[in-house]
Amino acid sequence: MTEPVSALQNMETATWSPEDGTAYEVALEGINHVVGAYSGLIAEAEAAVDTERAEQLAAEQRRWSARRKSLTPADRAAVDAVTAECAQLLQQLRRTA
Image 1 (cartoon, one colour):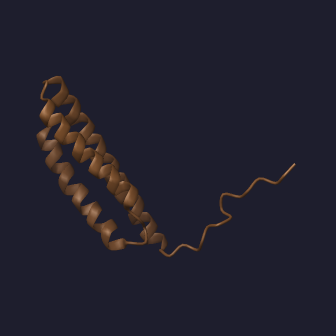
Image 2: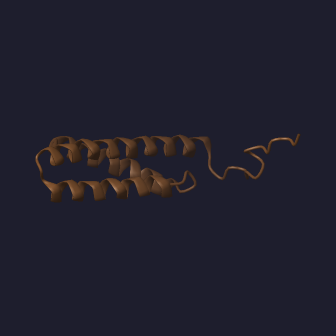
């Protein structure tokens, strides 16, 4: 029987600090809240049979999902920008709901 390959086998040393990692996790959580807020708004638009609005909201939701995939803890400036943008956008989306 062969030994299982370690998931850590080809991992390199992290290039960010623990604080950067924490900031990254906060940013991801913010994105998750934004995506969730869009889900609620999409459901409302669909219930109101506002197909155009539902499609616009779904496009924004996909854009935020893509941002989540492209974000890295090594880019602290982008992480901080996303966190700030999420906070502002969530306030706007909650007023819309």
